[in-house]
Every structure is written in structure tokens, then in C-alpha cells.
Image 1 (spheres, rainbow, N blue to C red):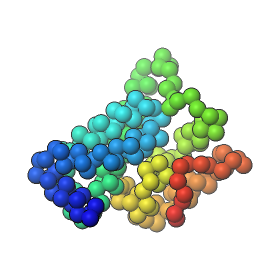
Image 2: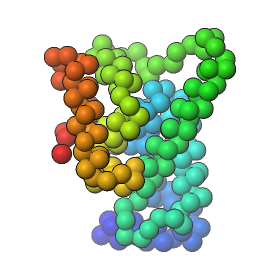
Image 3: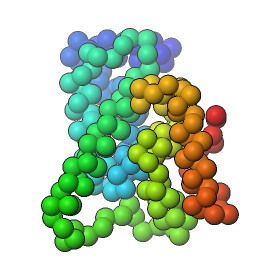
Image 4: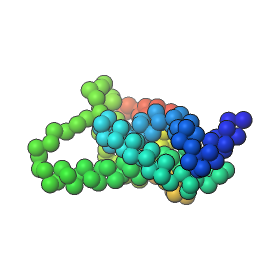
Length: 182
């Protein structure tokens, strides 16, 4: 039943119904925001990236293939927008010099700061897979759809990323928000 409602909303959105698009995107916004915060390490930048990604998704809604899940498609746009925002921020920071204060997520527990630092140590593809899977609550197959990456590559990136996180975090087990299903 829920899948039928999603298909109906998708068809309506593709015909230009903004309310139908809102019904598709609304349940994904918290996941998209958590994903963006994890990728950009800044709440303000994450809000901007999710907003821009949502506008892009609305403009490209005709590209969604009926029958495929909408969530991974949308979250793929969010991750691409986050990568774009990160590239822009680094260019801007390189031009501005050291005058820009470091904006962290929030003042949190010591373990949360250790996890953020460890996540920053991952390569972009590894961080993307970890965040989509654990913060975005996507299955590995859905991560593959969102990143246009084969399932085997997703699994190997996740495995390497978790090994690196475990090594960086030492004895404490990384608590990333969901159980691994790989």
C-alpha cells in the first residue's frame, strides 16, 4: 500500500504537483539532514545542501525511474550536493586564508568528537558509504543505487571504512547509529 502511494505521488510530482513532491521528500528530510551534517560537519552547511538538493530533485523529478525507490535517488542528490558544497568551501577557505573559524557540529561528548574526527579521516567515498548506511539508514543495495556504485564496491568501502574507524577509535567500538547488515 505504501509503495502504491509513493508511485502515485511520484507520478503526480512528475506531472508538476508540488504537494505530491512534498509528500515524497518530507519523510526523507531528517535522514538527508543527518547525512549532510555527517558529510559537511556543519549544521548550517548541511541545511543549505539539503535545501539545494531538494530544489535540484524537484527540477529533475522526471528522471526518477518508476518502480525504483525514490529515497536512494533523492539521497544520491543530497550526497552530490554535499560534495559540491565541500569543494566550494575548501576553495573559499584556501582563498580566504586562516581568518575563518573552524565550525564544528556541536559541542558534544568526547566520544562524539572522536567519531567526527575519525569520520573526517576517511576518504570521501568511504565516508559517503558509512553515512548513507548508518546515518541514512539505507541498505547496502540502496547505498549502491544512491552512489551509482556496484554492491561489491559498497561492501568493500564499508568494510575498509569500519576497519579504519576501529583503528582510529582504538578500543572503543564505533557507535554510528544503526546495526550493520553486511
